[in-house]
Length: 275
Image 1 (tube, helix red, strand yellow):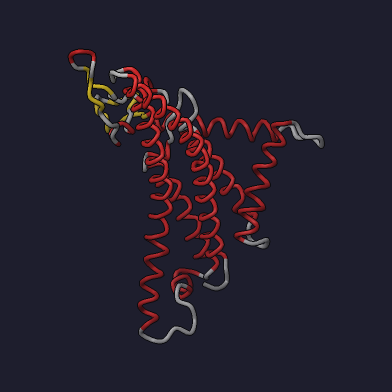
Image 2: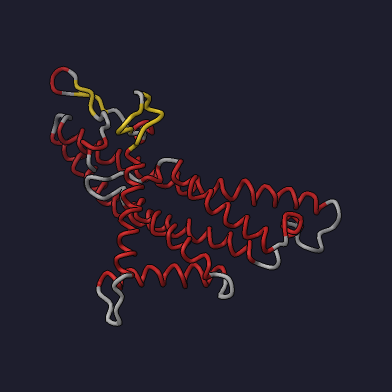
């Protein structure tokens, strides 16, 4: 971890060279870099810089690669095609269906690429900050998916009345259908967007916090705590942090896939003729 960039007060100095370890808190994830009028609530934060930088990298990669396509693909073209084929076929076509998936491929590819690169930024040296650990980023992406699948459903279900009728499967006995309608209404308009955002946010926040604890604990044990035993524990903590970094990489990739897959599932539900 880049401890100097994270700026977490891991060690509180005390007399005799010792110190007490202070665990990192969620407050450390709010890192305003440029404030307006001295108010930190209106600021350009580290997470916003990471989002803008990753968006620029993704745009540059796909635009420059697609402008120089060849029958014998270069390494960049190969990676771009693999990413596109994965999202197009594995997520788009297989989930939404061969009839309706094509208009949604650009959205799904953008979601997958942006979330993946922003998640992986959490372990890239000198960046090491996953923007998904700030709730605003998952919320904005969820809002986009929410608007897309609801607007699509309104068009496919012939307006609001048809959309609302489709929430209740046919054959439900009277009385029970009201309960089913309320549950489905809450699912489509509240639970789905809420869980989609919180799943990504919670995993990235918890994973990054875990890495902070491992590496800051290792720093404290190695350089502040007296005794060979404590320093040995610091080596173990550092090794555990390295191991957890690889595990975190797996989680980051999975979360990008899960978010995009669920977006495709919701869109597939919107374009289907039946509930």
